[in-house]
Image (cartoon, rainbow, N blue to C red):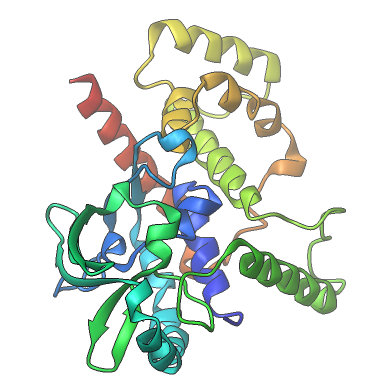
Amino acid sequence: MGAAPQPAAADLALSTGMRWREWATVLLPELGIGVGHRVDEVTFTVQACAKYGKARTIYVPQDAMRSREHYFLIERPDLAARSARSLAKRHRDLFIVSRIDHESGVVHGMLDGVRREFVMSAMDHWLRRITVRETDAGLEALAVFICRGGLLADADSWKRYRHGAWRRMADLQDGGTPSLPSKRWRWHDLRHTFALQLLSYLERQLDGDEPDAVTRRRRHRSYLSSHTRLNPLLIVSRRLGHSSPATTFEYLEYTDDRLYDFDEAFRGWVGEVGSEASYAKIAAHAFGLEQRGQD
């Protein structure tokens, strides 16, 4: 896998807040691919690949869906075609899907010579890695992000992609670009960026800009007791799948620090992920989920 899938993967992480194990193992049907019509945005459930197996709903907005197009039109088809022969030789070790029920999220196929069916949210990393489908060109992985072998890219592969991206960033840096951080960025930093962007947006919509850090913290403590369902901090905590709001609470110190103002850094990002418009849609969807949960 070269450089092309990295923007698509980064956009997916930035616009959903998913952990690496969640977005790196996502399947084509979970992104609405293969349903027979154009899908502008999608919602699906992660569980088996989530931390502690804690289920939560993931919303992928339109901008992130658009950013994947270059990868799906150019690089992924070539990788899939070149790996079809090697996958055919390994067919006995693979879960070969014969039917996908998009409405129920269930996939049907053969595994170890036995007909099996699985709910996609209940499929763990290793099952997702060996899941393939029959196409006119042969077997093709059902995972979105694949490597040269044709199957789901593993942790070492993603580490190499990240290090390669860092080296290219360092080589291309000049006086007109922002200074790079002192430490090499991690995939998990994209999740933190999502959290800070969404938290800042929700706060601005609810109360407007508040420059006093002490006042902001006092306001959040008040929300905890009087606005549980629509508290921006708790909404972000639930969207991230944190086991305790205390984990999300630690992010508050960064919302008042200009060094962590990502608006400028991510302006012009492919698909405009991180823009006000994108986070407005994400926030609106999050509010809708919270209100339905309250009802």
